[in-house]
Every structure is written in structure tokens, then in C-alpha cells.
Length: 374
Image 1 (cartoon, rainbow, N blue to C red):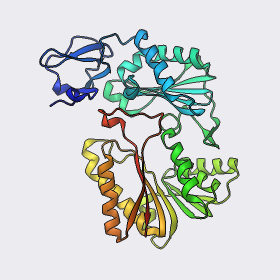
Image 2: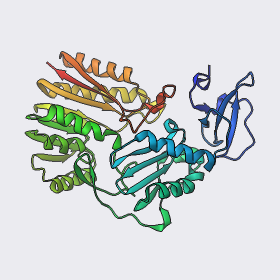
Image 3: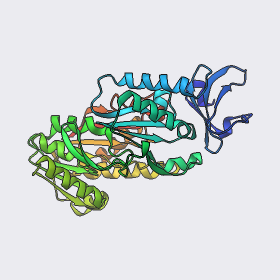
Image 4: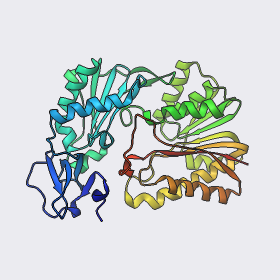
């Protein structure tokens, strides 16, 4: 049975019996075999995902739909923090549209042809709603090619972005929102940075594997860790961490540039009281799932072996193709091979500003486990 019949918002090319004769980016109603409406979605003939539902009621993909949808999306966030996600694609009935807010700067990503065609109107609405200092169009995501779209970075009304300091969860980060990864910062983990640090870092030695811009490392240092070591394969990330630490007056954190798999192999004798594993997605394609599962297991195995008795492991996966149940099994297998009794303390997910749809598992991409090893 096609997933769309169970409420999933996507339809793939092989599931369409009679393709519509319309332009990519236009709205079209989808009917099931009995002629019943499944809602209206954006058509994209160049993509494997040819139809993405945005409404169960037939309407057009225009300002009359998009503007109220934007208003609802912003309202869902309530009194959100100065840095947060305002729009999250299908989860906010706006397929392919992502909007992140960094204080007085807004960053727009258009990941589908439908979102791409309407991003000018989206920017006008956001400008009227928030009066931001600047709006950046980050249309440089590699996935745009699947929609037949090119890549670019542009600026609303020609106002060029200048990299500068932004405060996120009480710490300052020097961010280049026009060129950094994704929209400039991984906002989906900002609450976990503070949560793990506030609950588990005090008085402990900490390893922040795949430290990126230093979110976990700096929060742990701020919350009383006795020492913090951050590892990342990117030299730019390591330099960013050092710069951010200097700005925030953090002196107990140090950073090394290394491949984390190699680093674990070369430092088997080291021990830590708290280890944080927050790697980039390993399973970007369906064919990569098997290798991703091996990678996750190996990382968690090495981390568990490096924990002191009673040590804490906070481990995460942002691979949407690796579900929570599978991820739990991977960490459990790693615990078995490490020959350690490991107790589950918490299961974590996405923050409220990254909502998910019940019938759309792809929207639940981020999951994490906080465990304690005997």
C-alpha cells in the first residue's frame, strides 16, 4: 500500500498512474484509485518525490495559502528563543521551506522547486512580520539538485551579510550565516548542549567528539567540567571552537583536529567521565544505511570502553534513515561487545521548534540516548 494512503505527505514517481501536465512547482490535487482526494501538493517532475502534500483541502500554492501557513508556523513557536527555527518544511505544511532566526537575522532555505518559486514572497512576509536587519537566501544545499535546481547564496534587497557574534543559550558564537553548514548553526541541538552540560558535566572530565562549533564543549565547561577535550575532523571547526572559547572566557577546554575513528584507535588508554557523540549523518542515502549502522556501533563501542565506571554517554544520530528503535539496538549491541552493563537514563529527540508529523517518520530525524555505564 502506498504510504500516502496512510497519511504520508510524499508520493514517488513510480506510484503515479497518470502524471499531471503542469509546471514543476505548481499545485495539483491527488486522487486515489477510487477517485477520493488525498489532498493537494506541489508537483516536481524532475524529482523522485514527485508530489508533496501541503493541504488536505484543495487550494493553490500561492500567497493566500502560504502567508496564513507562515503565521501558524510562527505562532506554534510561541515565545521562542532569539535563535530558533521558525519554519520546518512539511511539518509546518510548507514543503521544502526552512526558516531559521538568529536574533535579528533570518535565513531562508528553499529545498524544493515549489519553495524556490515562492521564496521572494516568503521573504516579503517575513520582512513585514519581523523587520529583521537582514534576510539571507541559503539556496546552496546539495539536495536541491534532486529538484533540478541550481545553488546560490543571495541577500534580500542586496544587503550583504557580515559574519558576527550571536548569543545562543547563553554563549556567544562567531557565525557566518551565509557560508556555514546548513543555515549557519545546528539549532536543533542547542537545548541538548545545555541539558547535558547542566545535568552531567559538573566535576567530570568530558570528551566532545565531532565538536563542530563547540556547543557541547563550551556548555560543559560553563557548567563546571574539570576539563573538556573536543575533537573534529574540520580544521575550520577547531579554529571556530578556539575563537568561541576565547570570546566566552573558557579556559578548561582544548581541541584537536582528527578523524574521530582514528583518534579513538590511537587513544585507547584515555578515560573520560562524560563522552558526547554527535556525528554528522552517516546514512545520507538508502544504500549507505548498512555502513552507517556499522559506523554508529563502532563509535559507541569505543566510547563505552573509554568511559570511567559510572560514566555517562550522550550519543546522537541525525540520520533520518536510522530510526530510534534501530539506534537503540545499535547502542545495545555496542554495550554487549564492550562487556559493560549500561543503564538507560534518557531518550531525547528534537526541540519543539523542529516539530514532526506522526505519519511522516522522515520528519523525526534527530534522536539520542543518554546512558550510564557500570
